Image 1 (tube, one colour):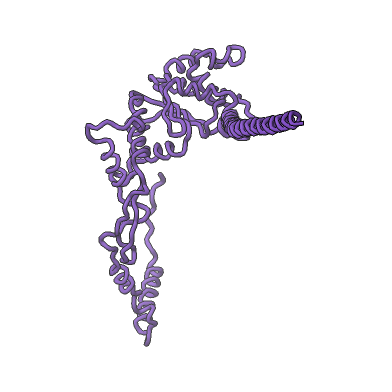
Image 2 (cartoon, rainbow, N blue to C red):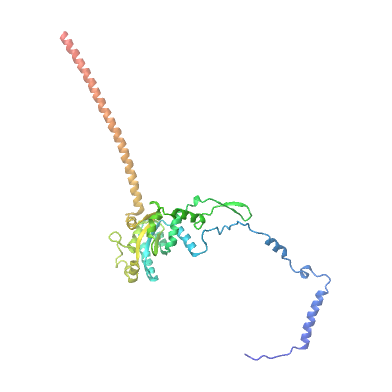
Length: 355
């Protein structure tokens, strides 16, 4: 660092600066009438007083932050809202138990699942959409259990409105029926608390024994038996209905990493169209030939055959009644005709005898 050189300020320059400063001050002080903007500082006290006088009502609730039974800004609350939305919007969910899969194994499992779903050939236009929106994810078992309770036992249409104050102070009626509300919490507690068992028709009562240990779910955006069969052939193969892909057709499926991941997955059940299915039920849905279109065609044929059978039964009864009446009428006519001919013969014999 170079040394500093001390230089004295020239006397003339210092006196000139000081004289100019004093001249400016004297000029300002000697002005006869200074402008108000220069003489007085700006006034902000009135605006501040007006803002501080406004106060919110004591029972005002912001519309963007309704009251909740649990803190709404925690990760568990957000996971709960995600799971409830997933259960309401997804028609097909498969539940798996997993045993300490590594990140590499999860990547291999998802890769083979994506390949299997992409190879499904379907005549419908939603085949590619189903394959792209399928998702295999790990879930928090306890939070997913609570989400199942909320979806089944909480009815938002039965929540009574609450009286609160608007921003203007006016009393209004507001319904807090979201998944984190106190109404949802009370509905779940009333349905599951106590020693009384849940009804047999309860979906939660049927699926709760399956929610044990670490879980993962496979979600499909549509009930497609073809895509379900492809997923079962990869994640839970069971020949001959759902055979695993051959090594020649898909060599990546037989990698050691992928096979290690598949062996750590176990299918325990599923939830299809709000109905709970065990392992055999899931396989039955995946084994439907032709998919939902084939089921619809079978239903239409059954309804048509039932209608034709009913029509033929009604027509057969009417025809048999008509035939019975006609045969009886013919018998009566023959009897009448036979009686008249007998009378005529008797009359002819009596005439001949008299002659």
